[in-house]
Image (cartoon, rainbow, N blue to C red; front, side, top):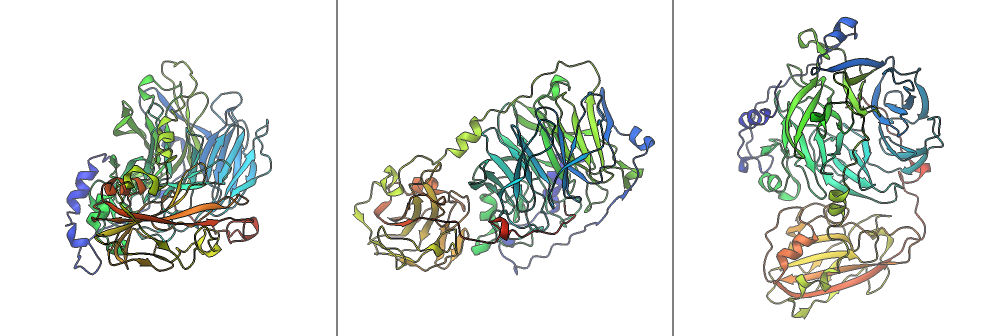
Length: 613
């Protein structure tokens, strides 16, 4: 088994010059040897099950069989076990009331939704996510569900990675992983290849972290409250590339995909938009913390906080590795342990192996879902042979304890950054200005109504803007904010810097990417949605009109900032360099939610099923 050493092999195998791959058509010539190797499925005979290996004192037993395609597991506070079945499009209920480690009865179907996959439980409610929708239902005392209510209907469409997963964070918010639509491409929908942060009622969501190819498994470390996730590496780069990534996932950060990976790996084929070089993209990306064998396909991730395993396992993570198709010899088909020390990951080590059999030519299971039962044992789903396994420690009995709840502080602190501050032109960072700038728009009069097409309820294109030139200006900054938004006040709708000094007007409908080629060199950072470029007004339906302030700063310098910088980074760099400032404020109100495909039940577009992981 190759562990963290895979990174060294990866870097040696792709010793690319960063400058050489700034753009396509640059003479890149990289031979890649790959395999399409899919070990054949074999029955889970008693002899093969007896060959499963786990650490001393642990046993792996069969909890339930004949389930066809079990994927994700969620366990309610009273012990009810919910399992999604992607191919069958349903959720089934299992119980183990007598605690003998075996399901009491055949599975009971409690919900049907096409492509149902991710599950999460908060209190007495079960949340279900499909490709584009999130549903919630009350859990009745007998474990069955009440009526399903759709709270989100416009998640991005599927593609290569349509299997959404979700979990409630210690801050009470719902975190939803949305995979990429492709192996390696520039996504047109910024919510693809991300983790979203969604309010429990579905009415508010932002992109928590970006450029994560497919982070199906993620969870919070019990001692630190930090969010960790395992991201799927890029296919077709070779048997040992790209390593599967363990990432510390933090708000506002981007994690490299599709142009960078690992610690300093660079994809030889892709090209960032806006003439951004791969060196710049790499510099703005957060590297992985640990790497695992390429193509192992990490699925569910669970931090241990129960009372069944020995104390040494407390706070460690377990990851189900579904298994490779793009590598020979095959990788994955196992459960691995991530050993944490003082809240930080130290290494990977095998936990349950043996699902890959017959000298690596066959498999008896493709592990997917992991969940901890009330007794501290783990359940593991196999969507190949339709089995759920129970992993328990049967050595010296441990004292059962209540699961440890991760502290909410780290997530709340991240969500609170840049919130509750004045508008840009009122902040001390802009106080050095000695004159004012007149900001105009043919589409927005001072305190006038902003047309619906500039809102997120319609076209969501940026409005035309212009301003008077300022003598001595070396660049301009543009920041748009809504001071009436809640709970993010002010909500940042647009961040742009290094607008050339010769540019004093912007046309309608600018590109929504980090760097523009017209005006050449204009940079756009992260707004409060955590997307680059303009994000239009989107006040809650029925709110009084919100104000939207388009603020322009004239600077005596050009800012040296990484791609994807946010408002506070821009203002920090601009402090002491502001020659003049000005603002144009318009108003927008949404009286009724307009019909829009994907946002209302009548307009939902269903996505056909797929076998992509």
